[in-house]
Length: 219
Image (cartoon, rainbow, N blue to C red):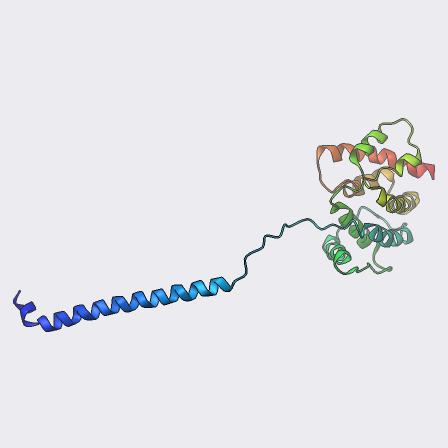
């Protein structure tokens, strides 16, 4: 067309400018990609660390001792082992036992002590009590105290279990706690057997009530 012939120098100049602009853009992108690669090379490789549940097994006997001391001193309180509205505070205390050895103060509220004990027992990697042993012993006609002491999953926790049984007896024997062996088993049993509601644990709750009732009567 005539207008191109008339303005050929302008058209040619615009074409060269466009090419230069494209080349500049490509050079900028190339430099950016090179910079990005250099920066990524400085980032250390990601290490996949397996997430495992908290393990309180090394501290569980200490938690039992601290909380049962409070429970024994306040065994006449109404609803011991049943009232559990302090779980949020208990979670922090249980974690502190693992991380920095924090101990629940001796004069703490008894219901807080029970909540801490329940939380710690329920979060053990293995149930504190062996469910199969509980079911088997609960079906026997005679339940000797010596057999009750052997219900723990780990023998290292037997001393702690004896302290728990002492606290249970003190609460059940109280005329003002309004708790007996059966109600304690229903309120506390799941924590002793892993904290998970399943058919085996539910079945074992009734047997645990029978076991605790026999043990309390033997004392």
